Image 1 (cartoon, rainbow, N blue to C red):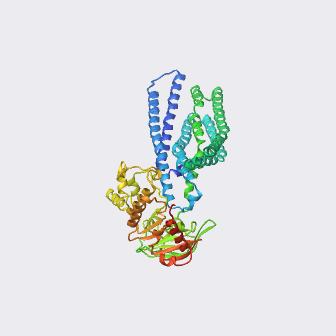
Image 2 (image 1 turned 30 degrees about the horizontal axis):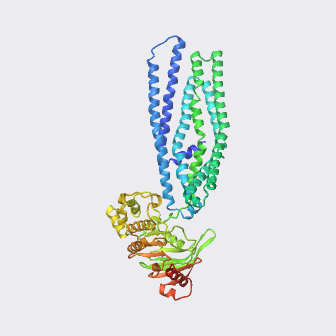
Image 3 (image 1 turned 180 degrees about the vertical axis):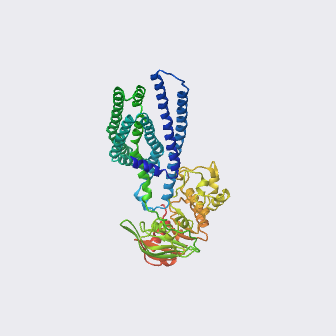
Length: 575
């Protein structure tokens, strides 16, 4: 139990001091609560002695106790709440920042549902209960301890019995925590599987409907829901016996306190007023301790949640020893580069160079390694062997932010955020002015259709930019890249799926983007590759041809076949 409490305290990060103050306020509140027993003791002394004096001291102590407890409870609750929300907010930001520096392979092994579950359900558990759980558990023990010390001063023999009860209760609680540690992680994993299954079901709804699989697919989600329910019930069932044992422990020591008080009074070693006080206290002394113990049942679940959230820190980043580098030129070189996804070799000893401010087109059959080659330049992955250089420096020498300032990427599948159009364009340069955004949009040939929207640049796009056509989304992504104004442009089949209505404007936007830049593009369209300064033909992880269009089209090989197929497709007509 104490290991989990320490874990919560560590998880609090920069909010540890606030959490400490919260627990201190809870302890001071416990001291104010204990003052009520002093007032009770004074009252009983006067009643038993038959000499009723002034009640003002008793009333004064009660007022101080109640007001002090209210103030401390108010302060403690506020600080607990602030700690819980802010420490989880900082953790979510930390996870978001760290994901930027993690190899893309991580996202292949950890699905969207898994990551979503961590930053929502998992951290939601921590956000809502961790700080309060820590404060209540420790506060409950401290409150009981404060009362125990007070009773020990009043009657040390009975105080020792109360202390023994606290120690036995802590022992039972610790044993229950160890037993629950086996079911807590299983319940957490089931929750994450549930989030993953629901996300997959919703995202794949179009496929489910098109194949008439609504019923079958829904059964899979239902099974996951039932599994999550079963794991939650297992956790609760594992709690019940230990909860009963804890209650039995406090009841047994409460009875022992009553019996001992009566025995000492019968012997004549305990005054009647003290005996009555102990009889009353026996029903109240362990109340805060029971609340703390019941709250401690959540500790193992919280521990599993925090462990899951912390797994992101166990993933190595690619930005450990990078430097802030501003290259003097932007030529790109691959020097005997090999790369594989686990056992699958994608690039095998690839070497080539791209001079500054030239255009290089990469063509070849699907699965040949074209996208991987571009991703290695941006250091989405690190090479297995060889090296990739930008401006004569290995990309691994750069801090990742420093490297990415040199590169703009335009993908075939554009993702736009659920935000305004202006903020989506500003993603390339967050501090840009509105005038700079408009200028970039005009150069990307998207200003006119933006202004035709109801709120212009303040129009909020749906998630993924679903309210726009493919060509419109593509031009906004180009405006984003124009605004960033990086010296290296990577185009990953940026015009592959554009409708004819948008093709001319999109090509004009690309022409504007690529002026005086070092360009590497993956392309299948003849007009796109024809004017490249060099063409690399990639097949089976190797460069099998290189040169200009005129040279390669005259050679037998993949490129000539590629051009022949494209020209044949262009010449097709409907009869």
